[in-house]
Image 1 (cartoon, helix red, strand yellow):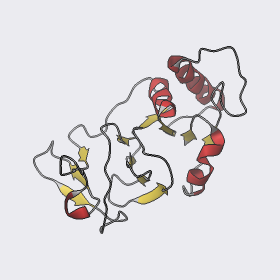
Image 2: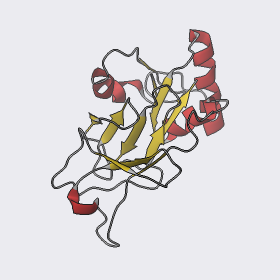
Image 3: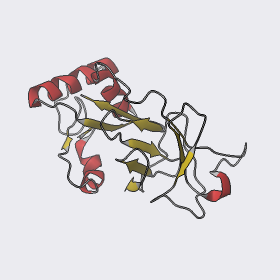
Image 4: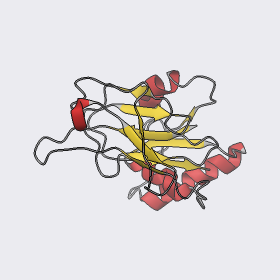
Length: 186
């Protein structure tokens, strides 16, 4: 796993991911990295991320980033080949003013049939008083086998599944609202 933008902000999350090698680094201009003259452009962050992955000889790594770090990971990934193109993950919300999961149960729904049939996946997710939502870009999937699925909430939680949604664990529960999650294998 590669965690981005400022390394120390990922310490608590990395500690909750057992049996994975984790590399957290500071992007240029952030944390303890060099502070060259701005501007700091997103495509340069992506190039830096790809260069680090090449220098470390990383293959098949899962990248986790928040906001600009997530976009940098997406830029670093040369190509994404979906393993199962008929698989869809959604997290439904109801209501127009107060958007939250139906029945206040946080569940991800998975279809392996392009939307014809759906499974409700809630093992490890809050099943009572889940008054939270997920923004439009708040869910992502990696390309590992089995695939990892990640989502962040407007209440500052990040949840992860390393088995295509069959079970979930909390990676973070004290962040500001999570507007986007991105993953990349670099």
